[in-house]
Length: 628
Ligand SMILES: Nc1ncnc2c1ncn2[C@@H]1O[C@H](COP(=O)(O)OP(=O)(O)OP(=O)(O)O)[C@@H](O)[C@H]1O
Picture 1 (cartoon, protein in one colour):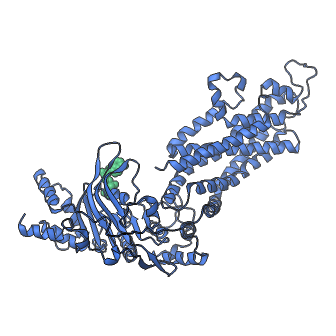
Picture 2 (cartoon, protein in one colour):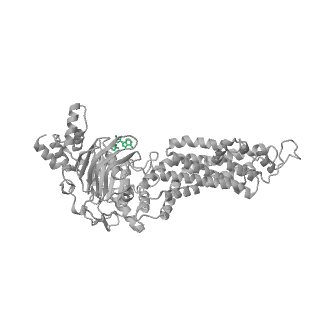
Picture 3 (cartoon, protein in one colour):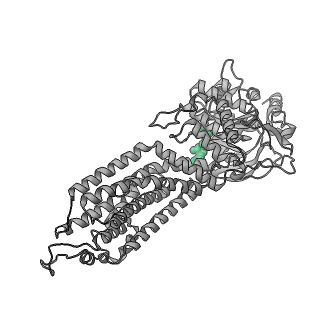
C-alpha cells in the first residue's frame, strides 16, 4: 500500500480519529449538549423537549452462550443523529449488532465484553423502551383489527396517560399521514389465512405504531425484506424524512442504489468485524483508496458487497490479501463514552397505569372474540350436535333398574366432552398470541399480568355460553332429575369442567410454547384425565403409586360432582328389599356401591375452582417468565 493510499485511508477512516473531532462522525454541539433538544412530537404539534439519543459502544464482543463462538468481534462505534444503515453480507452480524444496541439479544447470545452507553450512561431495555422503538423483521400484528384500531390500541396503551382522547386522535392521524396509510385505515390487517393489507403496508403500520410514542431512536431490522423495489424505496424515503427528528438505525442486506443514497451514515460489517463506519457518501472514497474504485453506473451497495464478499474468482491468496487490506485499513478507535455530558438524561414516559391497561386489553380481547365469532359459533354448534346425540342415544333414561347401567356412562360422557373443543382451540391459537404479546411487552406496551388477566377474564365470559347450551340440551333430553337446583348444579359443573379443560390447555401451551409441542403433550394429559376420571376405575381401587394422577384429572371431580348431584335423592323403581339381587333401591345405594362417597359436591366444586386457578397461575408464570 502506498503512503498516499494510507494517508487517504487515514483521512477517511473513522478509526483513526477521536469521535468528537471526526468530520465523518462529527457530532453537532446540540447532539452532545446536556441540554435537551427541542423537537416537535409527531401528532400533537406541540414543542417537546427530548434528550438526544446517542449510542456509543466500545470493545464490544458478542458471542453465543453455549459454544465458544464470537458473533461480533471487538466493535467500537457511535450512533448519533440521522439515518443509519448497518450493512454487510448475510451472517455478518447486522441483526446481532442491532439487537445488542437495542438490548434485545436472544437468550443464546450475550455481550461477553465491552461497554454500551446511551447518552453517556450504561442502559437497560427498560430505559431504552422509554425513548426508542424497535421494528422487527417479521411484522407480527393482530390480524383481527383494522389499521386504525391497531394504532388506536397502541396509542391507548403506550402514550402518556395525561394525553386526552383528542390529542391521541391527532397523533394517530399524523402518523397515518406520515406513513401514507390513510387509504388503509378501515382495512383489516389480516393474516396468511385472511387477506388484509399488503406486506409494505404492514411494515408501515409497524413503523407507525412505534412513531406514535415519538421515539428519539428507532431500530428497524431489515425493513425492506420481502418488499418490491418501489415499496422498499417508498418506505426508506419515509424513514429518511423521519430521520430529521428521530435517529433511525436499520439493518439492510443489499439495498438498491436509490435507497443507498438515502442513508446518512453507514456501518459496514464483515464476519462480525467493522469494515467501515461513517458517512455513507464517503464510503466509495474509502474503497477507492483501498484499490476498489466503483465502476461507473454500478450500484454502490452492490460494489461494496462485491468487495467485501469472497467471490468464486478469488484464490485463497486473494482472500488473505483482501482480509489483510481491510484489517489494516480500519483501526478500532476509542470513543468518549460519556460524551463529556455531566448529567446525561433519559426520557421518562408515564404510561397507562395497570388498571387502565387491564380495561383496554379486556375490551380488546372481547372485540377480538367477536371478530372471531365464527370460531365460537362452530364450537357452539359442535356442542349442540354432541348434546343432541348424547340426549337422543340416552333419551329419557327413566328411574327403572335398567337406568342405573345407562346413567353413569352418560354422566361420564358429559364430563369428558366438556371443554375439549375449547382446549384444542386454545393450544392452536395461544402460541401465536403469546408471541405477539411478547413483542408488545418488549415494546413496553403493557404488563404481563394486565394482559393475562384481561385475556383470561374476557375469554371466560365467552366460554360460558357453550357449557350452558350443552346443559340445557342434554339435561332434559336424558331426563335427569326434574329439580331446578340440580339442573343449576349440573350446569355449574359443566362450566367449571369446561374452564378446567381450557385452563389446562392454557398452562400446557404457555409452558410448551409451540403448537407442535402442545399438541403432543395435551392429548396425553387429556387421556390421563379420562383414565383417572373415576368411571373406569373407582378411586378406591387405584394403585397407591398412581394416586397423585387423581389430582390431574379434572374429569374425575366433574364426574363425581354431577353423579352425587344426580344420584342423591333419586328414587329407583323395580327393587324391593334387595330383590332382584344387585339392584339399587335409591341413588344413595348407588353412590355407596360405586364408591363415590369419598367426596361431596362442595368439595368437587372447590377442587375444580382450585384446579382452574392453579392452571392459570402456571400459565401466567409461563407467559411472564418464559420470554424466548
Ligand atoms: N442465537 C444464535 N444461535 C446460533 N447462531 C447465531 C445466533 N444468533 C446469531 N447467530 C449467528 O451469528 C451470525 C450473525 O447472525 P446475524 O443474524 O446477526 O447476521 P445478519 O448479518 O443479520 O444476517 P442476515 O442478513 O442473513 O439476516 C450468523 O452466522 C448466525 O448464524
